[in-house]
Image (cartoon, rainbow, N blue to C red; front, side, top):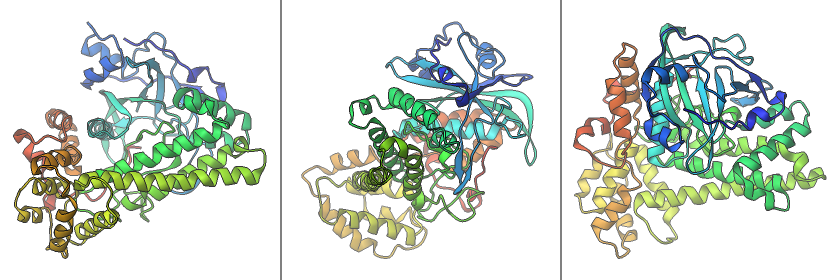
Length: 487
């Protein structure tokens, strides 16, 4: 099924520890992503569901796999922990997909490792389904993220606040190298390992950096650029990661680790869902600043490689951090201009976007539905329909619409403008209450709604009549106000 070529396993032993999956009493395949398997070049012809469940719960180690737990450190809510590592996941190995790109195959929730810190290393069913739903939704939305290859029930029980069914998630990533991976070695003063890791990252993710005068500075700049663009994409779809610790920031520029993540219903820039984010560190509007802070921690690790002179190294790193802010601001504006149907350059475009967001905040407007409805208004729908996503009468909306109408006159027909806006404003997102509904049913072994939701989210920009109920915001009694990590 797999054809492995494991470069990370060939790095020194300080980078990882051997790992073996725990026993699963009765593995059962919940869902297998056949389209992704084909894109990865996996040979699944004739492989039964039972065999896939055995392989992707860790009961059978595939030929060529070298299971390992990766070492890393991390700042968790601003506090540094010098050793974290894969405490409930293991890297099976790496494959080369049909486009020639290297991909990690990781089992998450597969049992304790050398980094488990007395934890059981297991995953409950709910977090596994949440990650499957959101990561595949992101793929369809066009937001860089790790992917879901499979979800397997283990037949084991997991003890959290209550007894829950266990499961294993098979995650596919460009790599699982994190900012925290660099921090692990930098904290030990192991500059040789930091350089070895940086060389590995350049070879794997940023080969263009090798041609630069200073490859390590070029790598840092490329990592920062990808993260800035990624976070702008998050904001454009109303996403809140929830736990932007440095060990949850992938060097590849993919969204990784969907523990307490959530999507905005009503727009509020200060919105927090994560139950462990007591002070709002990772609130919706704080995410760009935290991303920049995380890149600063990466830069600290790389300082000895940026220049022999410390002052010059700091100057170079600060230049990258400034560029992060510039890239984010430009990307954010481009994305939101597209959401508003704005083309070309307008002197007041940033103000126009910001004013709408403020009106939405004051009017407690549903984030996704406001932009989708605005698309229809651009196509000729009655202006009054724009009031539907608002909870309270929005002050200033009429004046804003007058300014917006004047700005969108660009020679396109209303139908063309609506089509362009609907191509970037999703009709369907993984709403929090729907994810919880899928999880609640699955705990009782009913996966029908989970499958329905995943299938619907594969076409988020379409308005299928059969999925109209999934597009609705939550009723007051359905509202999700807190999300939780899967540990």
